Length: 320
Image 1 (cartoon, rainbow, N blue to C red):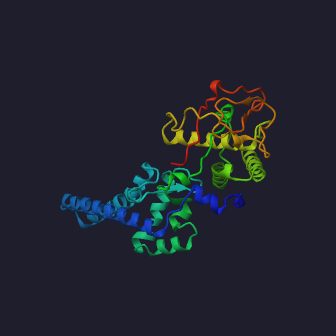
Image 2 (cartoon, helix red, strand yellow):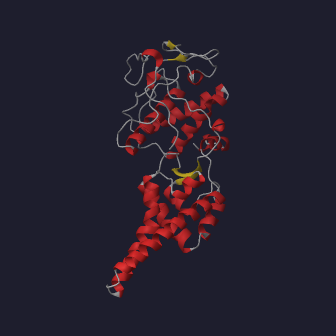
Image 3 (cartoon, rainbow, N blue to C red):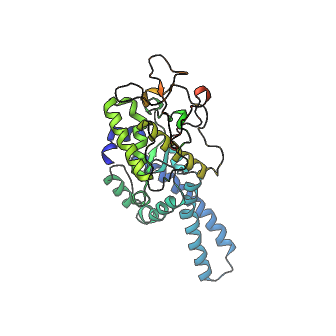
């Protein structure tokens, strides 16, 4: 799948943060952590003045592990990759596939950060970041994460269309555990720029991505479903599950009606014509837009009627 992840697609989807901005963010984080460590250390020193030397040494070690090491790990976990320094510099830590990090990612980054940043004064982290093509330090490599820029011009971010309304929620039973992060990233990048591709090239890429997803999930693409629509629906299903895990099963951000016909050209055939095999939903399509082709069958093989009014249940949500 590496051939699908082009340099241009990476620039549109994920903008890796470079060394100057990362160094500034780390400096701010270290300043806050050391100030907190000094305050807590003085307070504990006064509170443990009556203890023996061994007990005071144990308290000092525990304070170091909890404040300057455990504190950033907890902050990155709770904020989904945004520490105080990264928030000030407009950066965020994400997984390689663009999704939000979890505790294990923050733990690996923090543990290796003790060696890379604290014990070597940042020399190892700077060298690793300069050598890496995406500016990753060793903690990012072992944790499978990437520090990206969040403050990018809105006009340069590609529109990622939601799946057609009749496919929303149709793949809730798929097993997505075997799909690798690289395939998710390739699918998201394709969806973000498929309207910029030549129709024949875009159709071929969609077929390859749909075939790879079907092979990993163990479920074939339903007959009559355009490959691009299938890819969008599976990616949306994965994002819905991620949001439910992150927010405790509550309402998923980004759900709601989609603009009818907004991305109708994306679900057309390679020649620009609608895919045969089902009714055509024309409600809300703008001038010059290709109507959305709906297939006659979905996962169950039964005819699928599009929702009334052409309204989508969910929309595609960019990575947090």
